[in-house]
Length: 122
Image (cartoon, rainbow, N blue to C red; front, side, top):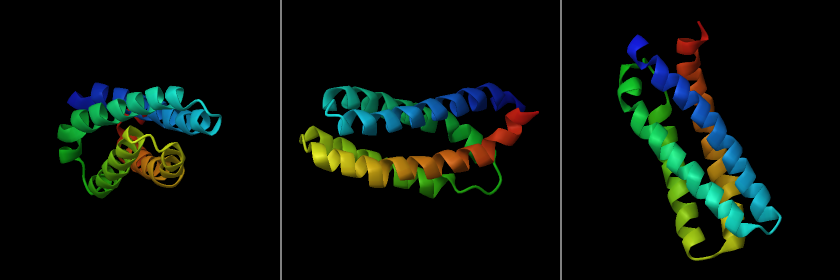
């Protein structure tokens, strides 16, 4: 795992940033700043997909972890919110952010930290 330490550190940092971004999306949409929220949503989704791609070799080397089902649930939530957003259904976007995307991301984020933090803690 030593050869992946830099990837792990950067991924953990980006994961924290994306969580803040998703929380900000909810705030923007709640305050009627839909377009600002959408920009941050797309940035956060891009960040997640980059992390997912970068983690492929790392996760293959990890012992038991629950990343795969959590990643799938998060991808499904992100795909749904993007689809709804493209149709311009603002209220539905906020609902999906609050009840699907952010909770799925938080579960994924928690498992990511559980699996990877020990490798950068020392």
